[in-house]
Image 1 (cartoon, rainbow, N blue to C red):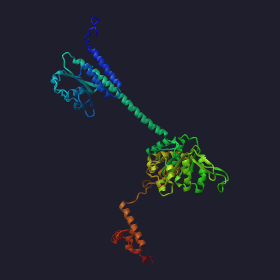
Image 2: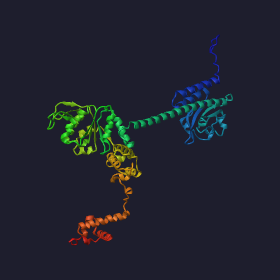
Image 3: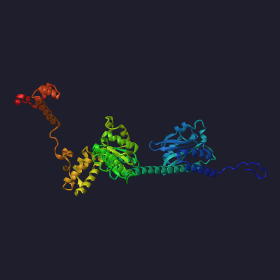
Image 4: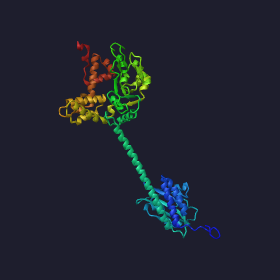
Length: 527
């Protein structure tokens, strides 16, 4: 400050305590608002306290509710090793009691306080009588989650109660920041969970309308359909006969941008070799006997749409070569023609054959296999999606009830048990045929167990449990095998024993056990 008369610099007036406190609280609030991660704000908060309060050391300790341990999370004036040693249990030392009780504590001279543990070891070698310790709880609601503490040099002129009040305000600001960040974290978690839920809902919504099934194995198929439908990539559908490969091909086509274009099906196994090329690529008039007019092939008819080649593994070697050219060059000629025709049809092929084994055996071209196997989709067999059996059964009951003008209300419990326990080698096609038959033969609006084919019948449902125990059944089998062997050997025990793979001694024992008279099988016995 400069005086108006002499220009001499006068000492600045001391800053009032209230001004220092306001400056400190403003700086702390700005720091807590500015940094998103609370762990990054604790250090600057303690630094501001040291500048404005004359604090020698300060700590923020937090309670781990699972372990019940209080540890120093941040410190000012402590080394890393000293901070690491600052660990307390609830009720242990001044810090432990503050967190346990939720009330502040003031130690004017730490040397005179037996509860002060100096666990960190930071006060060794100092005049402890000159150090005051102030500790206040950090609360969320009525529960203490930690403690804020400060060391300062003792002075009769210093009001420790004023320091307690100031630390309580700072602790409240820290607690409010914790609460806001917890709310933000909970909101982020809620949004993540909501996003996951919506993703699951979208998966369910995407399920093609023509495919029935909620089994986990089918969800993978739905995901693949969603990924490939909007592209023009060649798709190879793999799976056993009857699993619904054609339905998946339909789903790919009608979920794509080609939905308004043709969907053309070709069963490569149903057409003879002499006609398959004409069916696929068309022919010109006079190309062969009976070709009385020009005819467009399936690839031309599917222009801009999708061509579904079922049973692709049954194509002849010559047709495989021509199909390979279509896949590579996207062009072909009609049988007997010279004009090159471009095709924009998307190819979806399907097979229940082991193409890899056919390639090894030389019955399927390797280059064609690689061209087809760009995006394989495996459709699981019905035995791997048991959860869908009843959904499919209900669908077929409704379908064939309408078709055959029947009013089937339900499937009986024994019939359900049969459907669920069967292994379904024919997959969905076999299930559909079984349900159609049951709908036809049902006469009381209910599908009973006896309406299902014999292959589905169980011993319990038909009352045909095997009589006797396992030992009796094995004895009967053994006796039958002995009789068959003796009959084939014309009563020759040694020959019968060799046929059964046992010794003559064991053969004699078994014959006596079952009371078999081997002599009646000798040639003279039949004379």
